[in-house]
Length: 231
Figure (tube, rainbow, N blue to C red):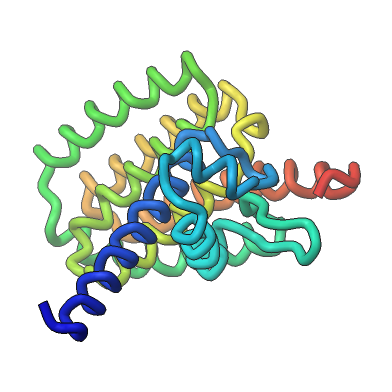
């Protein structure tokens, strides 16, 4: 094998190791094995993941660039934690993107699909109610991303996925309460009813109301935490 080929193979292996570390660390955040605000000891993390330190550090740099991890000089890496300002920006993006898709969703979705979505997410909501945690946000994200599939715009769908991912991975599960599950389920029903009636105006009102309720609850908790000196 020529030197150039060996160098290319080695680079490919390094790239795969970094990608593996990136996905595994992100999955740990997803499963709350690394909680928002928690310090990351990359040597320990490498051992837990059975990956050498170099690709772990490079994966953390990539996660930092994506906003999921922060680096504090002389202190190290920490799991990213959402701020009130970031939450407000993410919810504003959600509202703009979701409202834009309404006409196409109404055009592309049929009543049978609406009822299938209703039944599927009622089951997920019932499960989340028994175990209130970040699963509430996950269920909500899956609901809206499912609707976005009928919007016919892959770029907007991808952007929405990134917005929900940041809300999900950077929000502390202890901020969530069981009563919010029932509220989310009721708000989802209102959105589906408006879509079934093919009423774009009512769908827009239902989505705005839903996003506003979520935003108010999240930002209130973040504000209280900040005032308590915990952020």
